Image (cartoon, rainbow, N blue to C red; front, side):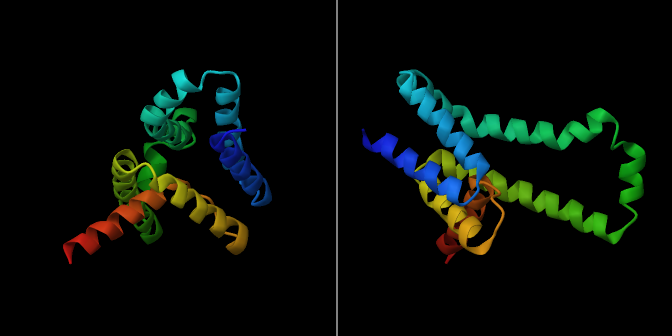
Length: 151
């Protein structure tokens, strides 16, 4: 058994212990790709385009209530009449900008993914945190690194 398979199996076990379904599914898919002999063909494509695919899927999920009619102009206008909605709006803008930095960091420094995954696993398993994924974590790391570079 090669190191990549062993590493993925360990991550799967950690995901299972931490009850991180997303991690388990991701690892299972990668293991299947490797075990059926498609790793050399598919893994470079997933590595190159996977983050963008994920962002697209998340965007679809966020826009789904608009497509179903659950959220429309009326709800948007009504919601913007409360302070909470304005805070949510600004938070959404902030998080999207932070995540943008995460895309940049993961694209230019992909080994950060391992540290981000381990950080997420630690937070979920030990502190009952919520796995928000490596993108926002990378965005925060990117912001901190830029602040450090500034000084």
